Length: 161
Image (cartoon, rainbow, N blue to C red; front, side, top):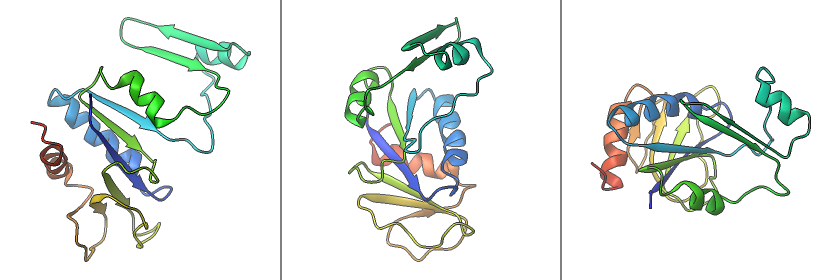
């Protein structure tokens, strides 16, 4: 079963921007990743594709399949738990990264941007931080330009090569 690591931080702190680079570099190393993003305010469909339009028309499930990838739109009676999502995908990948879920006890990388906040979150299980300003901290701190070093740190912590 794939290990989980969470990237957490305040809104607009740069989590997704950082993760796009981290995921890309992990995949280049042959590490299959899954990302679970918590969207507590709901999701918007782009509306530009036939599958978006079919779902917006009221279909309960739209499964769009192509040789390159598949998309599944599904209406939920309630939000799926991280445990339910994990059970569905954990055997298909080497590493699961969550964006959000700061209340869960997963190992966490906190992301901070000076213009958003210089205060760290009051959360547990923080392994490291990524910030665009100096931090006096008890955990390792990386800059946004140190993605390779951050990845090495994560892989060592998770005992993955």
